[in-house]
Image (cartoon, rainbow, N blue to C red; front, side, top):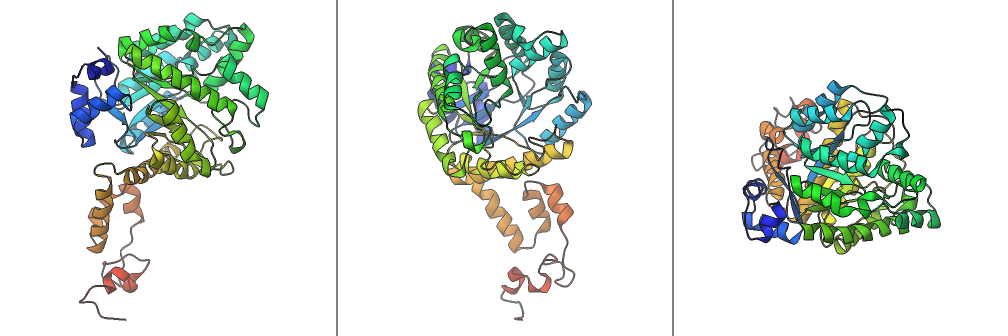
Length: 428
């Protein structure tokens, strides 16, 4: 049985019990959320070496890290080091988005190397295999697509991004309305070209039941991808994006009826005034399914700083109800991220997620900030560092004031307001 089938039968699974302990909620809260579809419990039946993870309403906002090789950089050891950094920096999940080399062995080594939940985009494997065999990507077959998804499930992948809403109808909306940047999703563009060349409908949409059969077999969560997400502010919330979302809402209902858990992926580049509306639109159309957003990025002109741009958008989206943030690094739009890029991206997204958790009233979130305030009041430097989202950076930056007898930092010294505010302090 899948987690959804057990929840509907009134059963609390071992995975739900574990997630409840992680989230400081009751097991029944998790079970009811899974039954209603606003929570997903993520773990492939074959991936028993990791702890399950719950994503959704009333829970801590999660952070995903994207890693993986490319055709220009096929250094697996570097990607495995990114896995280690992802764990130490506090990421919740890892997505292997490799597009260079032999993807099956790369994926299996990444899964083996991490204690985190792992996601993939199987269409990348098919496209890469075509190129490795000196074939055009559009020559892939329907069986190639589903076989790759099956292989990912067999390897223990916990959730897969599948671009089921990229259809002849939704892509025609983009062509009819016109876009500045067109389709910016790799998976979305691959499927659009395949449909155009083969004069066929997207198999992931047309044969959705076949996809559900695979997902049920492994209890693999389907992350219904936003293949038509906007790649710039000018394209945000256009007909193509909304048409795709409507289709994903319909597929969400079908998946749940089949016993498959679903979350929905969202934009992308969105003006700040429209972020909350995008979240509310998704929750309404997709019956409150967990929402997984890339950023979103509320400006297009900050290359090199897009981790900050995404953190701003992510905090707003999370506060409005988004459940899962995909990190963005300073290297976004520019290059494959370095180890330092990965760490900075994770920390920025974790800051956004924590801000969102405070706004949503997630259990335990506000307590960390209160603890930090108390540590600062008492000049407890060890406590401050331990409570920081990035303790290493906090410790590296700390300079205690000699003039204030280490009861302040070098910013204020003897003029430290907290020290001056004490009753036993001598007025200046």
